[in-house]
Amino acid sequence: MLFGGSSLECEEVFYNGHLIKFYQIAMERFGLIDDRKWWRLEERDLLYRDNKMGVQLNAVFKKVVGFKGKDGHTEPESGKKTELCKDA
Image (cartoon, rainbow, N blue to C red):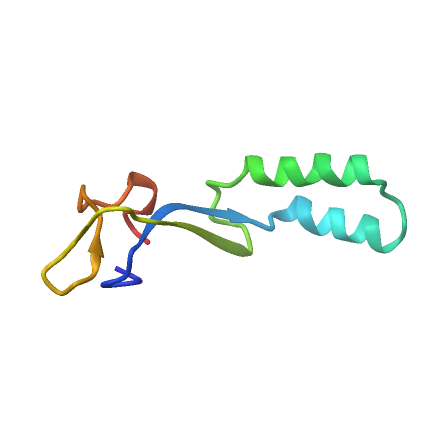
């Protein structure tokens, strides 16, 4: 557990920064892309979120509303990690 004893629980892990992202950045650098196309490419990059070939790993955590454990820390009521964060 990354944040042992805290009230944060892993919600989702995904990757971005795939090959299409490098194309997007190069196009912007040379002034060849407008906002509309930028966001279309951003969405396409996120379509590959399960592909581990991305250069950036993202982890989303949520604050758990639960009960106080023996040590005084908040613990999730389920006590289980979500399926997406099993290996996180």
